[in-house]
Every structure is written in C-alpha cells, then in structure tokens.
Length: 67
Image (cartoon, rainbow, N blue to C red; front, side, top):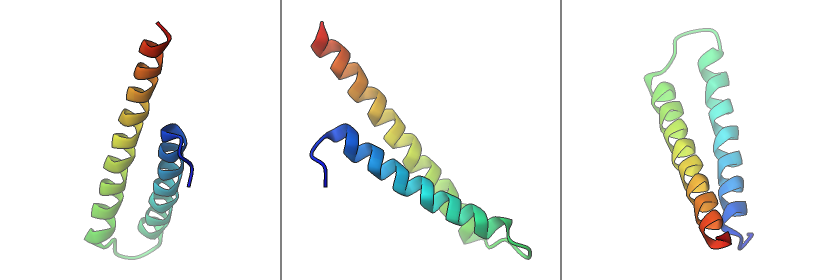
C-alpha cells in the first residue's frame, strides 16, 4: 500500500465509491428495496464525505507548508 496519505485516501475513496455503486445497483433492481440496502448506501456516502474532508485538510496543510 502507498505511504502517501493523499494516495491512501484516494484509494479508500475509490473503493467506497465502487461499493456505493454496487449497493445502488441492488436498490435499482426490480422488486422490494431492503432497508439494509438503504442504510448501507447512506453509511458509504458518509464515509466518502469523511474522506473528502480529510483530503481537503491535507490540501490546507500543504498550503500552509508552502508559506
């Protein structure tokens, strides 16, 4: 695994986005939508949001280091 924190976050985000798509496909399938599917996709989106926030923080730190 990469040692670069930004790369680690990018890889984690990509993995979560792929899982979110898989759950979206489950929800989009004909038939009844399982409540667990909705909960799973919401939790994945929250995790993606946390990673996005962490990536923004890294950018801020990089900007401060450049000053």
